[in-house]
Image 1 (cartoon, helix red, strand yellow):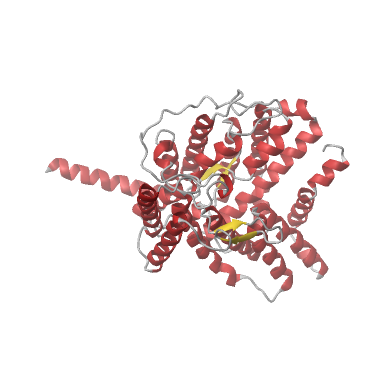
Image 2 (cartoon, helix red, strand yellow):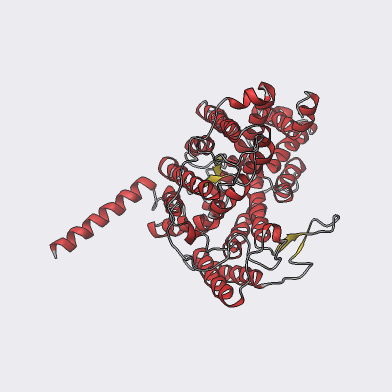
Length: 494
């Protein structure tokens, strides 16, 4: 009896310590919600463990070598390092910044590294540029410049960034599930399903999962998004066992009605010994010898600008969804958030898996109730477990995980009413910010277009003095960013 009482007291003390450190009660959450939210975020972004190796692990550098060395892809090695770094930096985000934001290798950036940078130098040189870019951004954070830029952005533009990201992740969900697809007809970029029709068992799983999740969210069921992912995965496993659907293949070309990313079937083995030999595969300044100082600096600038503003937009959107923003639209401890993100960028390069950055899929966990860094720590632990439990992670297909993204996209979209649509010098930049994120598949492009047009329209209206000086600088940098190819051609670098 005494032993039972002692354990009860110990559990109570541990709960109070967690609550005090993470401010769980103060932010209107519970330990249970944080754990569920962390797991949901992991499920929503676990695809990166399989997808990153397919992008950077299958591309050759200028010397014809694959990442990790050799003339054959090292998929398992890249996957292990991807999960390891994501786990470590996400735990760091939770412990240091106390924010429900998970990090992993950045999609888009990894493709740019693979096909735009490594094609000009060795993989070690390319990863050295990533480390350099992360360190530069960290200096900008520590000097207060990055936060100052964030504070200079008008609140309604921050709202537009949140709304645009909501549309963006909803589109990601629809596309990854095969509900929306590219079309072979050049005038029409996308279409509904296969040739204008929904076809195949996987898309049925997506639709059922989406409807079930929406119903659960509407009825305010605790764990709605997590239950939606688990239920859809179970349905997918049953369907695959009966129908033998098989994988879709890249771009849904080889089997248009197959499963995206993973085939949902119980694995033959639940554990796999990870190979971490990719860690440390970078050369900090090798790129400057290989392509020259000017070309290397332009590559660093391109990487830096994308990383710099993607995170600003993501942390704002997550904060808005979680109700954590202050009256100026700024998240709590934003300086720490930005510092951890900068360290993550450098860590990704040092580990040879490309820049790690904040993931908007964290909104799935926030939609489940996550409000603190405890959720990030749970997500990070899941990533670390995935280094040995990768066969289990590979059970979940896109079609089971993406309904969460669509639902969260809706939840983020509702803030669109906070924008003054009758004030055109605000409305037009907000509109471009919102639509260009999904239309260009880039958060940075949407933010850049919004900043540039805001500065131009406010100046044209005679309110140039009202524009924060830093916004002038950032708008000019985005003009350079958008014109980077003509500039390279002008300098004879392409």
